[in-house]
Image (cartoon, rainbow, N blue to C red; front, side):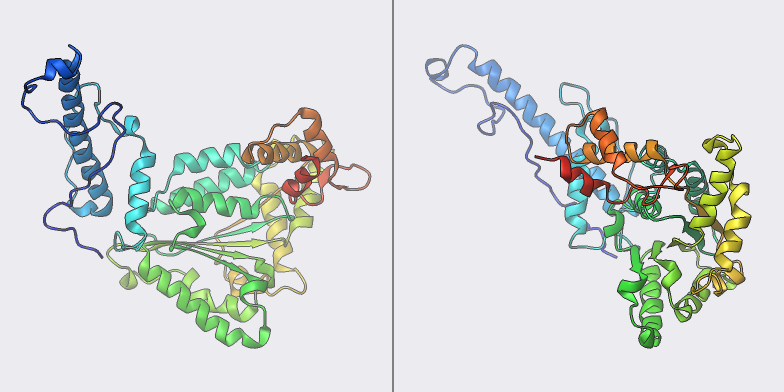
Length: 397
């Protein structure tokens, strides 16, 4: 941990002060001032001096907030902002400048015991992103927000939070994992406290499973020692070797009370898988045919069938692993198949993210390029919203 210096570092922040060529003192105008300047020169000089004084106060307040971020244990309550034309407040100055300064400092120094002093746990932003940016997944929205927030607000959790995301490709599993990282950590997926593992990329050779087990457990242990809040994401979980899943058992189960530290570490494991996707689609299709609105599909309609489908999946060690058989997974999160209207929303978001203009007709054209199933109903996009950005390229000049 980096210790705070005994004497505060003086940060000189350059602020845009229109018409300020230099620094003025307290003395009045010297001889010949009236000859070389207009009759308004001295009042303008006095105004500049007041602005420079306000800028000095602003820099000191910059330092106070910056030091509170880097050395929170030495943080003192800030006095009220001075009144005047340059009165300062967090909203007026803008959070962006403080973030830039903190990111610059933390890029070459550890800011706190966790190794990542930018843990944000922005639950308001998480709720907004899940409701606005994620389409057609009301069950995942509610379940992820409730479980993650509840877990991170526990004073002393006795186990990791384990969530298993299931559904067809393109329904938003990776997207939700990224939204979680962005709102729990200021650096998102780039945070030192977030680790992403892709089964066939990081663990491609079954003959090297013993080496993978050693590397994986070492990475988890090292990250937990460095960070008091960690996030581990396993993509293509159905392709993980049974030996790797077994190696995760000590990190997922409950910890004995004597093993708890004064500040219990918080760890979230996310497993992303296509397992159970067909069962989810069958249940949703049946309910829709029966006249049930999509938004009324409840977790109880899917959880039993989904858990059974995962446990009985052939050619996958995930369903037969200790994670499922020993109930180490806290929640199976179903991702519903996406319909035409959801694909249109994904296309709209893709245009907006690239700052491109679009029309309603263009959104329809892109949505129609997707393949829809079942053959009779043509209801669900077979690829969800996957490859939407690539399809937009067909319409660019």
